Image (cartoon, helix red, strand yellow):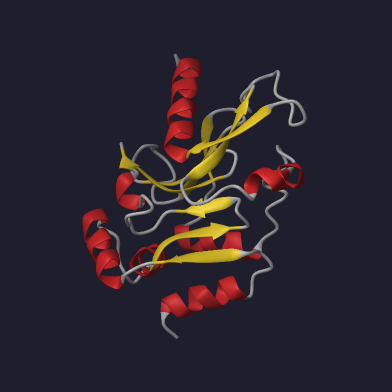
Length: 199
C-alpha cells in the first residue's frame, strides 16, 4: 500500500477528529524540493499530498504552502524545522542542528516553562503518536475540556493567547483572558519571553 494511503487509513481509524487540508501534488513536490525533504518519508508524503492537518482542533501540522495557509517552507530557521503547533502555543519541530543531541528527532517547545525538550521520536513516530495515543497525559498542564469552546474557533494558523501568559505564576485557566491570534504572533511573543528568561 502506498505510504500516503497508509497514513490516511491510520487517521481514519483514529478516535480523534483528523482533518486533512487538500493539497496539490505539483505544489507539494515544489515544496519538497525547496525544503530538501524525501518524498518517500512520512513527512514528505504529508507535504506532497496536503496543505496541513488538524487534529481535534488542538494540534495543527504544517505541510505544503498555499494561498490560505503557510507551510513548512516558512518555518525553517537556525537548524530547526517547525512542523506544527498546538492550540495553546506549544511548538513541534525537527531538530536539524539547533541542539547538539537528538538530531533528526521531534522536539517540543513548552508554553509553560518556555523551554525545548527532546521527545526522542521520529516524525513518523510522532504522526502515529498523534493518531493512536491518548494526548491528555501529555497535556496534563492545561485542562483541554475547559478550552473546547475556544478551540472551536481555531483553524490552521491560529492559536489561543492567554493573559496572564501560561508561563506566568498568575495564570489561571478560569480567569485568564483568551484571545484567538495568529500562530506567528504567538510564536513571536513566546520567543521574546524565552529570550528574556535566558538572558
